[in-house]
Image 1: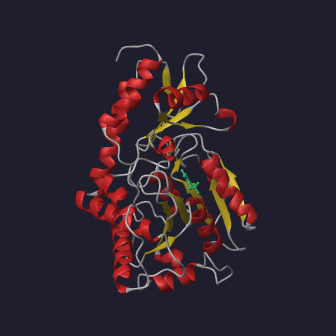
Image 2 (image 1 turned 45 degrees about the vertical axis):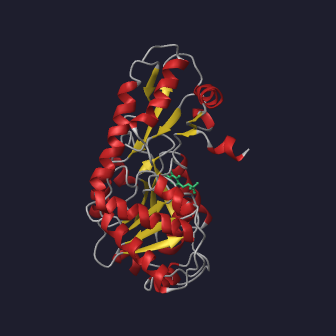
Amino acid sequence: MINKLTEKYIFTPGPVRMFEETLEIGALQTPYFRNEAFSKITLECEENILKITNAACGSRVLFLTASGTAGMEAVVQNLLCSDDKALVINGGTFGQRFVDICKIHSIHHTEAKVQNNNLCDTAILDAHKDATALLINAHETSIGTLYDLDSVGAFAKEHNLLHIVDAISMFVTDAVDMQKHHIDALVISSHKGLALPPGLSMVVLSPRAIEKINPVHQLYFDFNSYLKDGARGQTPFTPAITIILQLHQRLEQIVHDSIESEINKAKEIATYFREAIQDLPLKPYSFHMPNAMTILTPTDEKLASLIVKDLDEKYNIIVAPNGGELKDKVFRVAHMGAMTKEYTDVLIDALFDYYGRKR
Ligand SMILES: *Cc1c(COP(=O)(O)O)cnc(C)c1O
């Protein structure tokens, strides 16, 4: 039964195909963690994340044992208060999640939808003059739109906004730079581009964000205690130990090869896939797709939901369906993780066979 689940070709935007090195660590016993040896591992992970994100001097990384949404919620809970007014860029499911989080935690907020993938529309500014914080999902995974972080960052800086970015589904496949993009809080997570199992989220805080942390009003996600314990490489509660070991290995590799080469790899695979399927009755649904993922819509009468089902049942391939009103209109193919051209060929060949075409 388990094999039936795990022996699939996987092209979903989380979880993603993992590397052999990650799988090998996953097969080991979980070590004890309240000691110097494990502290060293965590501190090295922090150092490498700060390097890869080009975080300003004095920035810190918090390791939360939870999926990415907890990182989003914890950032809002810890960094925003009743004096704030959040401007949420709501482009889809994940933008809506930030809106819901603000609502639940009674944070004043307004939402904006943008036409393109930037914040050059001056109407946005006029409508939100009193905002103190900007919340955005760098890649709105539900519609495959990558926002232009140069434009978003310039906007945040110009209006002196605390800039909170969910980079979960574009980290290490697309470029994000905390200093260049004026980011104060960056949320990332284990099971997207990092290609680790789900269960670990990281929050990178700039010195400005650290200054703004609220006094303690919750236990599990209180950033004050994560900062305090993190200074010696520890976490307040038992972390996802094995995932941190896997993260350590993965980050060492990325830093060794360079983040630019990691991003280029994803770009190469995405381009390879998009060019290969050009002549099939499928077209990109977004004009601003990231390297992380391709979002497609059928140009014939085929239902996207049926394509997703058939790829699974006939070819053992999992691509991501959409929910709601996009259910029959689009499906998504991720290029994150241990992707190769050979692995991507399995999907390309299946699509050609499905449409009765010769590649
Ligand atoms: C996957 C993802 C998340 C996190 O979702 P979880 O189900 O909590 O892991 C958050 N934001 C974006 C943009 C995502 O793609």
